[in-house]
Image (cartoon, rainbow, N blue to C red; front, side):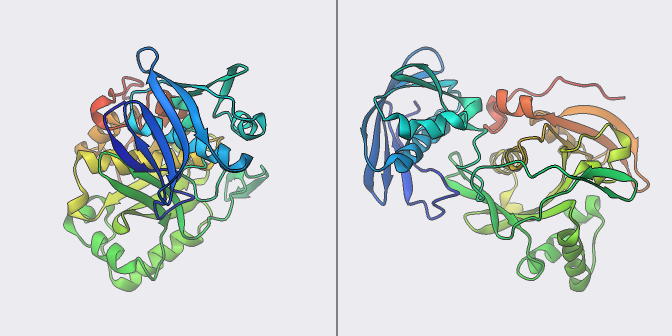
Length: 358
């Protein structure tokens, strides 16, 4: 493991950082309000693998399961290149069974369990505020000429939170509020840097109406990103099947798309970009486990944004023409995101070589 750290875990359940993991090269200790709840002794097993032994664990079965989940999150957050955590434990099956049922743990012997990186990062509980992600019942409806699944009503408030270890800050994504978030959104949209590509300059009332329209549209979800509570950017998430992009590729029922902007200059740069962009992709893949692809359509001449998509694992698919712009279709698969760990800092992520530009 990478030295010593004291990091908040299960941010979706403990937004005030009261559940924490103290990580050293030999031990992970999970504490609630500074009171130890679990001690996990760790040692290297093989390259990019850790062997852990649960030494101390208190509470009822549900609490023990939550602490084991927190310890797994801490191990993979603290050691980004970790492939596997192998746990040796005599913890009662009643505490472990929920973690086996969700796929977090895989049992290979009566006293030995394995947690892999791709299993941990596909768990929704540590990051989604709605808890475990469940598939919304599928019922097809028609919007215009598009037949697509009925979409769930988007909840208000914080939807996703994640502690970013290389920044020491917590990132949150929450649904935009047309009243509370309007001043920042208005300022961002009228800044020359944003207006160059969004082309949505306007008055306060125009921007209020814009946000309200996005909020009222069942196929879009307007989000505000914050670092430690400070708003820095706007993200417009959409279901691709009923979006304007659908005629230009073979859209799946659960493909998601994304428009984005960073409005605050102090939050630009690679460290911040890696944090918020990887996190919003993470959110989209967690929100509905049937989502297999994320698509974006940057303007063809937005070279900086296209380079960032490339470095973040998106494949370049093709150029195409909207009525208002020539665009480049880029696409990220669920498999590439989780198995290539694209939630990690960019300096340990390799650019995508998938796809071709046509």
